[in-house]
Image 1 (cartoon, rainbow, N blue to C red):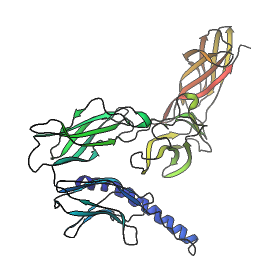
Image 2: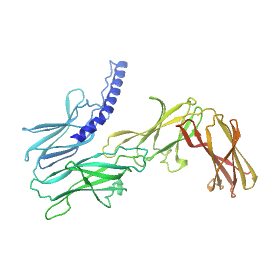
Image 3: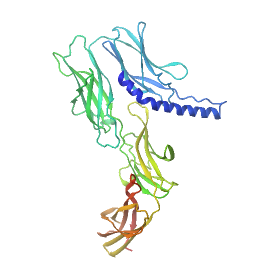
Image 4: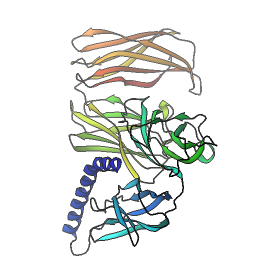
Length: 459
């Protein structure tokens, strides 16, 4: 089918790259221990998610897991055979679907998933099915039409849904596709049925329908194929479900930047997929300089506040050096069980030229506090200073919140930022100072932390 061929072309480059890497790995292993070891990838597995018949057609939905790329390129296929007929179609690893049409009603067929792993053709799964000639309809599958942009928060998605209807006697007066989405989970995490249904738009190709305006927010999409007859309306022919692509609601930013160090604050999302593994790579060109991996644990709870952010420190870096911060996630797709590796973001970051600074404070009277930040900044990378003062009770709980933009004075690289506060009484106070750091025309950090929760008293 055309839709399957398009998907295969999109996957081909990545598959070849993976195989090349594994080939190099095998060469490395055999070169070191050639007399005792042979590199063999784990064999693939396959199953039929669906295999059904309608009229003179057989519909199949398959799932092939090939995590170690053991299958030779273009050798994965599905075969249909009996004593009088033999056909085949190419398959994709992961989830795939399709139709064998114009078959003979009343005949039995064997359907097999086969591949070559370098040692000849192997059958991965096989079932037998009998073609029954009866009217009806089925939803074959879906295709995402929208190119997802991770930077767009409220992006909507469009899908094509493919259907097949067999009506040799013309009993259906109208065919429609209806769809709805589920925003919430029911008991045991099972998505609830939609509260409303919308009609899909018929496409220019018979059996194709357009689903539009679906928010990219981890939704479950429910589809119904219905028909009208002379005596009945909304006759349900088939139902179908699929999920929008998983979207991880993470946040990553540079909290501190120095000549030889970058400190990131990362808010992970372990709600979308519980066992997700996040990795932050710091790269120079194609070379990974350093990496940090984040998994869910009692020590790192799902981030809901600043206190629960994961702090990622990269040290030993070169000054004034640009890097790429690449955030990745690895997880098992909840629908297919296939291992997925996805890049969530990639941004340019940079270490700083020479700069330094230190805070100061003084009490003009019991409620009037002057906060200063003296800093050496010969290249003028710091600006937009802001100061926050929290009033605390005896247990350290925040009682009051005070904010001010700091005024900067000075010259020739030696500067002082100042803010004055009139405060309510408290047991103690803590000050935080942040600023904007501009390193180039394209790289700057907003809300860089210069002083974080520095506790002070009136003594």
